[in-house]
Each structure stands twice: as C-alpha cells, then as structure tokens.
Image 1: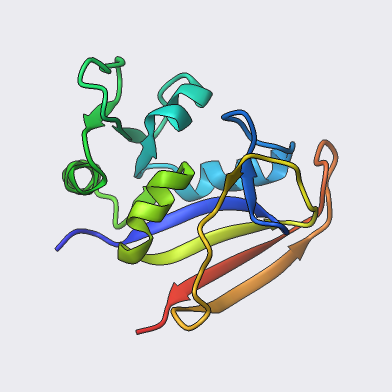
Image 2 (image 1 turned 60 degrees about the vertical axis):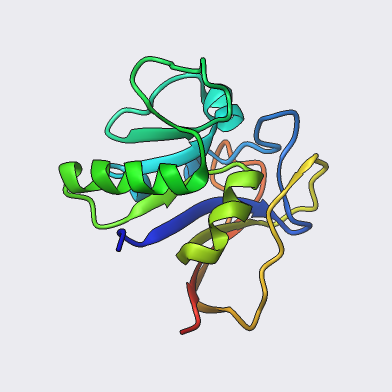
Length: 170
C-alpha cells in the first residue's frame, strides 16, 4: 500500500489547465500556496510538465513519467509508467518522511492517476480561459467538497479564485 495520492491543480471555470505547455494565467499568490502544499514531498509529473518548469524544485523531489528511455535529467527520478512513478514516489516519500505523494500534472498524468487519488487540492480560477489542455472531468458521485474558500485577486494575480479540497467518497 502506498501513501495517499493528492492532486494539486489550478483549473479555470471552463476546465483549462494550460496552453502551449504552460499556465494560461498569472497567480503568484496561488504559486505560493502550491509551494507550501508540496514542500517536503515527492511530486509526480509528466515529462512535458517537468520541461515547462525546466528544473528540480527546491525542497521537493520530482518523479518524471516519460516513455523516452534516454530522458535522464539531473536531480530527478525517472519512471516509465504512472504506476512505476507511484512506486518510486512512495520510496522517496518514505525516505523524506512525507505522508503523501503529490500529483502535479499534466493532463495525461492526472487522468492516469485520478482513479487512485484520495484528495484533490483544487484552485478554481474565476475566468474562462483559452487553452489546449484540460483537467479530466470529475464524476460528482465520486467526490465531495470538504472545504472551500474564496480569494480575491492579490497584487500580481490576474484573477480571483477559490481553493477547494475535494475528497473521494468512500
């Protein structure tokens, strides 16, 4: 049994999570929240998501999922399937003393690991955004909202947003 999987994601009102392998908005206040939620934990992400941030993140260990056998960037762990990534991230979490594993994207990784995810820490960006990458549709029968707080746009933020914690219904 592995540690719980937790998706941490920002999604627009129309389901967009990105465009051209990047974010479609600027929300520095939510980026601070992402850092706080993920610090000291292993993160699972796909190769393109990792390449969009272009470096390991301080205070976290990253497991990158790729089918490219030659992909071997310094400072990250490489897995060749989402299931392999979970096993590697669990071993990393044990070493780090982390109680959970963070799933950080992109869309294919979210879709692959959603069935095994126990919680979603969702930032709902209050805007309809143009983009080419969507978060998977959630079945409302499988998830319940445990908490929700509204946040007005802070200086530097392009939009207001809500922070929601969704937990899987047993």
